[in-house]
Each structure stands twice: as structure tokens, then as C-alpha cells.
Length: 320
Image (cartoon, rainbow, N blue to C red):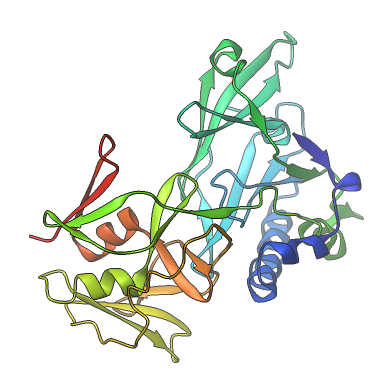
């Protein structure tokens, strides 16, 4: 549901969801980049922050100041780096200010935005999705989602950023620092099995936003004797995790520990992730001090195959 800046909660509450270091990294970076965007184009009078991929770090969009003003540009943070978002041209920016999230029967979340026709007064609805690089707005009908339950969700906006014709860094900072993570993202223990080349393995995984995540060192351990083996190291010079493909995993202890058996509150890991020394867009979460990655993202980055047998609840990894 929409929430104007004046009534949203204080930024201090975000500490319950995101570690202080992560919060500072995206907030300060957002302020600097938004200041630059709005200084270059004075038509960008309005700002919206929303979290359409439900990962704890919002997307920010600058919007032209008119009833028919479009979404100008968008940014988010991935792997500790600010990245640009490809924005659609088929909706006005105010659509971002009134988003409701519905839950499908299969658990999938659907973000629905609406806009009122400038001349007709008719309401148009859009499914709004963000895949990490592109915001997509697909027209839909109210009847499609009207019967679905809505879940708590907040998108925040402000129309008060400028002073004397220039964007105010103070106002930008007030807006960005007031953002509160709308959903308490939790990691539920995954009930799915993992099979590697047809053989069942014992591993603890979590279901986060309806995708399976596993400790990157556990996956490296399981694949260390296969053609798609990889090593995981903390690179002091790079200041982040470096995944080195083709290298046999070096055991550090604690791999494949099966002692964790309960749901946990988590936060997205803001530290950069590298593949062979090159920055990547891999999203990861920190759970109990360990990095957990979506198994499909790891498969794409490392080069192994992943399928899912829904009937049996099995994650099928193929290394050959």
C-alpha cells in the first residue's frame, strides 16, 4: 500500500532487518547517485522507493513532475555496487506510488500497481516485476487478482526534494534514510532434496521468496571432485567473496553441517561477490554468518545444470 514520506517509520527500525554496514552502503550510495540524476535533469522532481524483488534492498526511481510523467531512471544495489535499472515506457511514474502485493495459491507474490487515466479517470492495473536489471509493467485486469489475499507491503515516495530550483541533499538523505524494509524476509528450512548426478546428498538449504538457497561452501564441497568444481575464498584485496572456477575447493571446516533446523531472519549480503576476480551480480543472503546463494544463480555462474522435480520435491544437479 502507498505510504507518503510524512507517515513512514523511522530508519532506525531497519536495524532489525539489515546489518548496519549493509544499510549504510546502499543508503549513502543511493543519496549520491540520486543527487546526480536529479541535478542533471530538473524534470525529475519526484522519487519512489520500492522493493519488487523482496530482497531487503529497494529499487529507487526518479519520476517526471507531471500527471503524465514517466519513470525516468532507476537504480538499485547488487553485490555492493549501484546498478542502473531499465525502466518501461508504458506507464506513468505515479503507478509506482500505489502498489499492492498479492499472494497466489502456489505462494508466488504478485506486485500490482495502478494508475488513473489522465482524461478518462479509468483505473488501469499492471503486474510489476523486477528481475534484477529490468522493471516490467504488464497490463492486467482486476478480476485476475481481486480474490487473492494481500500481504503487508510498503512503497514510499516524496514530491518534495528541491529547494530554490536544485535538489536538496538534506531532503534526499531524509527520504532515503526513512525507508523501512517492508517485509521481514525469513529463511524457511527447505524440504526439498538435492540429487547430484542422480545421487542424493545431505545438505541444509533454505527457501527464500520461493527459491532454494544453499551455503556456497556446501555446494563447493559437494562439487569439489567434479568437472565443475570451484573454490571459495575471501579476497582481502577485492574486499569480497571470490569464487574461482576450475579450482578444487579448499576445506575450511564446518561444511555440510546438518545442525541447523529452524527458520531464521536474514539479510541480503551487501559485500561484493566476484567470479574469477570479476565483479558479479550474484545475490546472496547472510544467515548465521554464512553466505547462501540461489542454486540456479550458482549454476549459471559456475556452469552446472539444475532442474526441479516438483512432484518429488527434488533439486536435480547435473555436472556432466
